[in-house]
Image 1: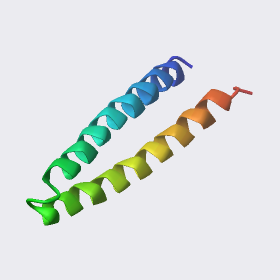
Image 2: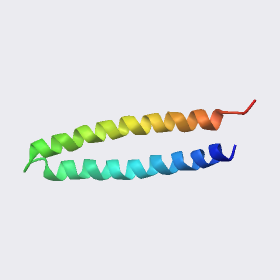
Image 3: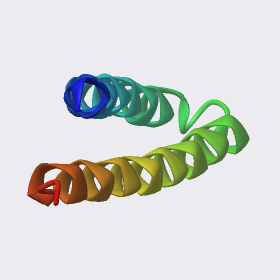
Length: 70
């Protein structure tokens, strides 16, 4: 059970941390879009993938929060 509590804490931390970074990638994509559109496009693709990962982490967090040991 102690491991599950630790994982709950970690998931919350990972989600928040990832969202902070994802926001920065998006900001940088906008900043460099005109000068180096190819780089901006790669950053935008990374944002999509990170958001997908965040969605999976959020789903895992919800499942864990709904979990009740038998």
